[in-house]
Length: 316
Image (cartoon, rainbow, N blue to C red):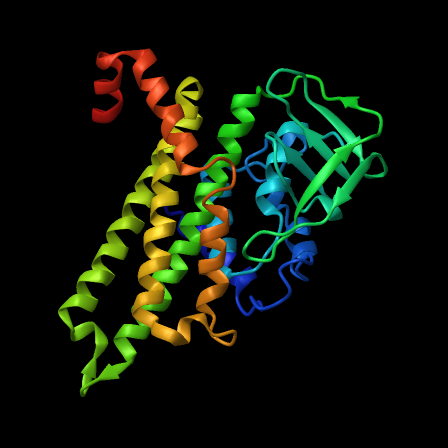
C-alpha cells in the first residue's frame, strides 16, 4: 500500500500539524483538506469528485490518521462517494449505515442514512436532534434522532457496498495510526539507553518490536488486497474488507499494547504523543463493526460459498 506521490503530498500538507488540538472540535486543518479535495478523491470528476483511485484515498486516510489529527475525512469521503455532485457545496455530510453513534454529527449540515432494508435518504441538520457523545479518543460520536423531512437519495450504492467502503477506510485509518505507534516505539527503544546500551539491544525488546512490524505488514497486505478487490471484483469486496478489518483490529490491539509496554509509564502521560494514536487505535478498532462481528460475517460467507471457493480465495 504505497503511492510515493500521494504519500509525499500528504506529508507536505500534514507536516507540522498539532495532534494535541482538541479532538472534539474540527481541527484547523480541516478546511484546507476540503479545499484540496481530499474527501472527493476516489470519486470520478463527472460525478463531482476530483478523480483518483480508492488506493489514493486509503493513502490519504492512513497518512491523516498517522498525523494524529482528528478530522471527519472517512465520513465525508463516504458521503461524497454516495452523493456525487449532490450537495456539492455542503460543508460536511456524515453517513449513518448502522445503528449506534454517528461520527461528527454535531458539525454536519446533513446526515445521510443508508439503512439495510430501506432506500438511502438525507436529513438536514435542522431535522436532527443530537445528544453529544465521544469515543475513547475524545472525538465526537453523537446519538441522533431524525425528526425532519427525509430527502430520498436515488441510485445510492447498496447498504453492503456502503458498509464495505466505510470499513475499508476505517481499516486504512487503523493502519496509519498503528504505523505511527510503531515508528514512535522504534525511535524510543533505539534512542533510550539502559545499562549503557539501547533498549532495542535487549532480546525481549527486539522481539516485541519485530512482532509489531509483523502485525503492521499483515495489515498493509490485507488493506492493499481489499482495495484491489474493491476495484476489480466488487462482488467479493465485502469479504475482502472483512479480512482487512479483522486484521487491522487485531493489529490495533497488539501494537497499542506493545507500544505502551515498551514506553513504560511515560507513554501514558498527557505530555507524551503516544496516546494520541493509541487511544484512536482502541476507539477505531470497534467502529464500522467489531472484529467479532466481521469474523462472524466472514465465516458465514465462507460457509455459504463452499470449500472450493474458500480455497480459491485464500490462495489467490
